[in-house]
Length: 162
Image (cartoon, rainbow, N blue to C red; front, side, top):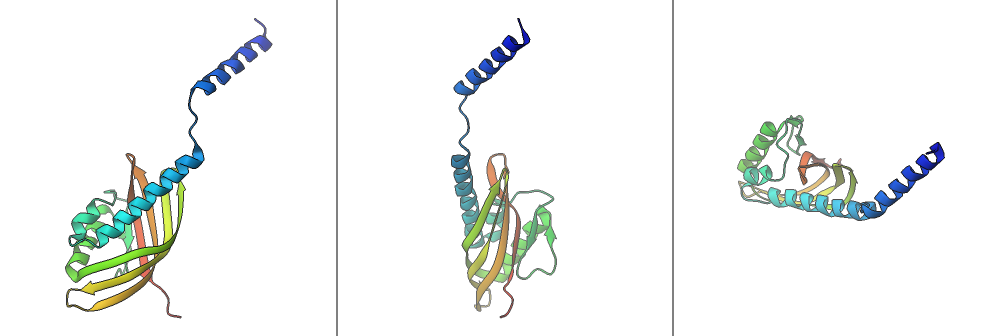
């Protein structure tokens, strides 16, 4: 068999193979990923509003040594699941309730990573009954681990005074 004939047979084989294997629809997949990340973000804010913040956060965060958190009361970057978990347990002791949402987030997904940036708006009621209005700038980073989108980084800080 000539080299040209062999090349043609290989090309025809690939054409046949690609005609019977469904090709993943990239735009549809991206839309599904965006919806799944939005659901993960919503779960984070539901956990923040939970009466048991520490327990609720355990379900939305990756339990990895590389996760990070910077909250409005942070003095440094909190690194690792054990430390991040402790941060949320301490938060639960200080607040009576949290009602926050991320407004108009800018969300982007690349492969198994996603991030959203926006303004967290809401209010926090402290254990002493003091109510604080909150307007924060926030960045949330998610990683898809075993098919589930989990938070791997959260940064929320006060907006600069105008």
